[in-house]
Image 1 (cartoon, one colour):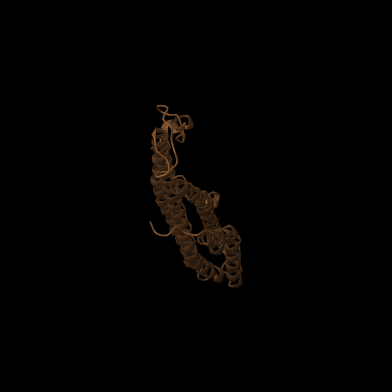
Image 2 (cartoon, rainbow, N blue to C red):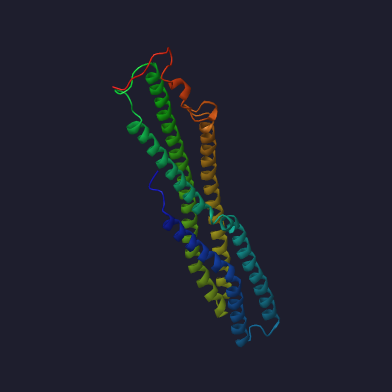
Length: 268
């Protein structure tokens, strides 16, 4: 996996996406304005003053409703992404929290390795029992560190997948609005209205399909990651050295200076 996207990366992608969504929400008024200008242009040339013109006006009204209906369809396809806007941020922040926990676990392991190493200063059965318990503690911190790293990595992958989704959709929406604006300009002239209407309907159909395709791709990625997280749950259940899902106890009673055979321990 490449470098996990930063919070700034994600915020930029989400801001770009939100900007484009807001433009979509406002676009019905742009459609009304373009069609109104078309009607004014046609009226000025008496194109709406006879039976044929009335028919043209009715067709344009029908077309306007179709365009606005497709805008609604586009927003519907985007609704899931709109609802999940905060998910990538939450995933990345949670990933960082797991990394922080991993750091603390590693610090604890290093303390045991450097501060709790008593070989060479302690002998006897109690010392041997202590050494065994110390090794279990080290193994437990290794396991906990691996779990933290794995969870952090998986959350980072899911966050990156979401970043890619929002970035791609935002970029395609920018391109869409170039075509959309050009089509509305044609409609507003009156003369090129039929071409503009065809263009705007085609542009909406194309962007709706792209959004649907991105949704399918993102869903597939998330399903893979959901399976990975499910597998991690299995790893967390009774992981290595965590007997009955519990941190290994020191067993201080076993380290009594008279254990195991009333033999004394001594510092050397």
